[in-house]
Length: 262
Image 1: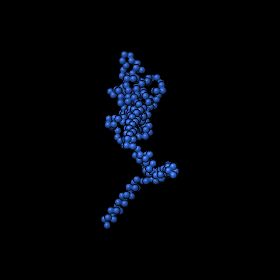
Image 2: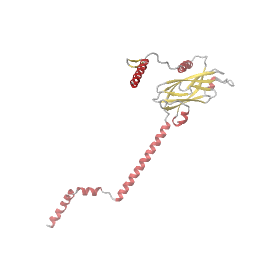
Image 3: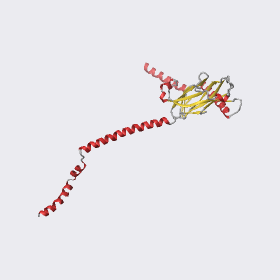
Image 4: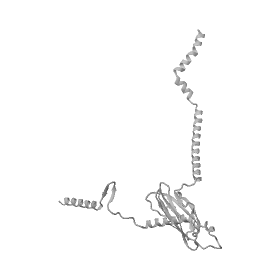
């Protein structure tokens, strides 16, 4: 009987464990105090590593952005040079076309290494998205010294064109570029190239064409906006006679005043 009792004893233990599975799982999953401290330390280490990796990734991205070329807001034509006819002792002109290729309003500004002998018209302004503008550049060509050739003078003077993103309706003032220095981009640095006015070339023909277009744009800006002639069209098929509209409003006011007086 003792042997039989001993043989039945291990059979009852699994039943006990099956009846209390929560006890076994709790014992199996409950960590010791030392393991809890170690786990907390590991979590803190992982958090510090995450913060460190995030800050390092931001630093890397900032360095990568600084190495990338700046995004252009303006497209220039010509894109790298300003062509001037070589006429020593005279003031000559060049022209450049600026087009706003961005989706925002862009302010631009000219700078030159020779402000005493060069100036731009206009020296700055604001261009709407998708719009273009012709700028005329004036330069006095000095007399050559020591038998200096025309090709030797092309790199002495340079022009820098800067851009700045602005909001619609902002008036242009040169101080905009001083107030927002960190947001100013250098679009291009244009060098001066002289061309022979007596020798036909593609560059000379293009310069003449651009100067003609620039002069036409200047004359167009000088003219006052045309006054509205005749009736004003408001919508499809709807024509409003402004004088008739004003007379109807006047008669309505007269009727109101007559009623008030009675």
